[in-house]
Length: 285
Image 1 (cartoon, rainbow, N blue to C red):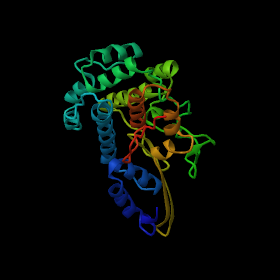
Image 2: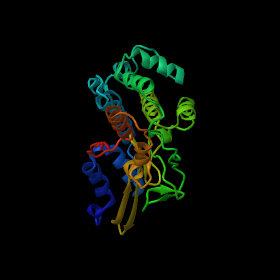
Image 3: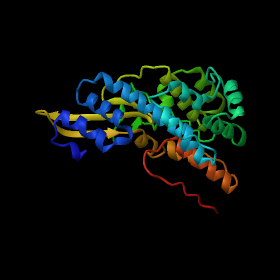
C-alpha cells in the first residue's frame, strides 16, 4: 500500500483502521502482527464484538432483505450490550441453539427469528447445497501466494467456516449438502453462538487475523523503523480470485425460472460477504 510507505509501524497501525473502518479491529490486529507490534488486551474484545456485530447484521438484516423476508434490525442494538436479548433475536426462546442438522430444520420450521426464516427458505424452496464450490478451505498454516490469493496452487474458500475446525454440525452439512449456502449461513450461526459464549478467538499471528468474512492477512517490509512495503489480502481477494469461490458458487447454480434464480444468486453472493458495494445483474436469454 503506497499510503503506508514511509510511515512508522505505530502510525500505520493507527491509520489502517481509519482507512478500512468496515473491519477496523481486524485491520489493526493484522497490521500489528505483520509489523511486529504487541496486541493490546482490549483489541481482542473489540475484535470479538466486531465479528459478532457483522454476523448479526448478515443473519438478521442483510440476508433476510436479500430474500424479501422480514428482517430484525433491532438485533444490532443488543450487540455488546445484552447477550440474552441477542440470543433471543438469533435463536428465539430455545434454551440452546440448533446443534444438529435435524435440530436446524425443526428450529427453522418454527420461523421465530429472522435467521430461522432465512434457513427455512433455503431448506424448503431450494437445494441447500446451491452455492457449493468444492474448493478446499483456507488453511492458516499453509503458504499463500500473494499475487494470486491461492494456497498450494489452488483457489480456496476463505470464510468463517474455515476457522471453525471439525465442528460436527458443519461437517454434517458439508457431507450431505456440500459447503454451500446452508453451510455458510450455519457457520455464522455457530460462530455467533460461540462468541456469545465468550469464545476466545485465535490471536493474530504472522500478519493473519480473524475477521467476520474469514481471515485477513498483512505483510510488511520495514527499514529503519519506516515501512518500505505493506501488502494486504482480504477474504474478498480470495473469493474474487480467478476460479474462486464467488464465480464457482454462482456458476454452479442450476437453470431455473428467472425470479427464483435471482433470489438464489443474490443470497449466494451475500453469504460470501463481499465487503464492497455490489449489484447482482441477471441476464435472461
